[in-house]
Image (cartoon, rainbow, N blue to C red; front, side, top):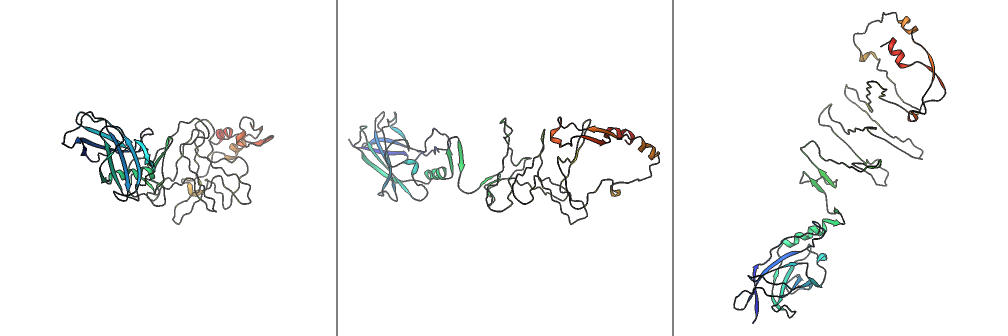
Length: 344
């Protein structure tokens, strides 16, 4: 008795994309009810099924085919996960879903063998073509996932054209990075400029100008060092480990580099040079009158106070503080704590 297929649900499609889970293949489900020519369902029946994908038309070349041996349930229903059968022709994962249209042909042998009878051919709907984006946009490689097509927007549907990742946020953090890797070479965020052309590209660029007098371009805290600037070169020009630039066209002050230091009981330096220091322009002392008010003569016998200052000779603790760049040998000068007792 000739067997026919009544499509219960022509294409019940669940995209099982390969990048979601490593063990799940790329496939879509096909579900149907097997009936005989009298219209009766075939319960608990072993079937032989061959699926073929034709390109361009229902009579086009077969780019992929595979076989199944399903068993119907008590209602005659069977389900195939197309893409996971026994391949006969082609490779499912290499199908070019983007450039062509495909037709699905179903053939069946009611006895579970390979004497297949044609059950019809139908044009694939648009839903399976979503697998094209999975195969060409986001891809999984081992434990990693990567994106090769265009820009990624997080918090925005219109990522900037000149950036691969555009993040916008209405919360305190536009992006948050952390690492628990225990090594002095680890970093929560690593920015690298790899171009070989003669341009001053930036590994990391920070800019914050919400309004006049507000905004910090970069803020760094460290238990040992807040920020480090290093340059190592054998060239013939001037190189900068850290560079500060200031310019103003208004009436305020512009400071290229600003350091502030406070110490409760130890010694703190707002600026310290280990080695030589140099400058061009004018080195201004904060004793400048423009920073002071209520200026009056010091009348508490200034010369007597000066005579209380005690010059001493000393040697620096070069072994205890090698990073400070202290001079070796005997020195002559004053002790800061002694001066403080005379002129607090």
